Length: 221
Image (cartoon, rainbow, N blue to C red; front, side):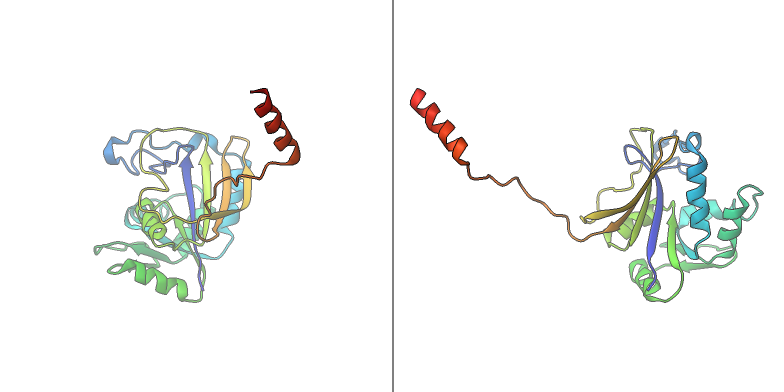
């Protein structure tokens, strides 16, 4: 069975919109695109290189696919990422038809939740999600994510699309790994741990000393 693994860049206040540049997603007049670029260091590079060394297929939303397809086949920068993204299989989730010009690409449409479940049930490489904010909301609403890599950047935007938006199903998460870069980026790895556990502090029975104190106070009154 294949896992669905998300790796998401978010601000400290949870915004995931347009991390790489202003042209990525200007929805609702978002003007802070490109907020990740002042925080790269050796650790963030090592983590990303480690990701690229693993076997994976890509599971992408329509908009992220279009951005990637216009960039990775043509860039001379980041050859490690470019080579991996260009060669691996891309599954593109869209509620309408679209042209898929990037090599090794397949369209998922119609009942996308059912189709993603079918993909997960297959044998093969895990399905990694980059960007794809709308797709992530669908995955969260249907609890289809097996591992979350959440990259928290030390910046506050105050507005924009958020990773955990309205509609995500309640679930507990277990922290299985964390790293902190010299630039303050926290890279946390979470796995689902079942239903959220709620509780309230139990009222403990007073001990002998407390009972004696209460009796003394009562007498003084």
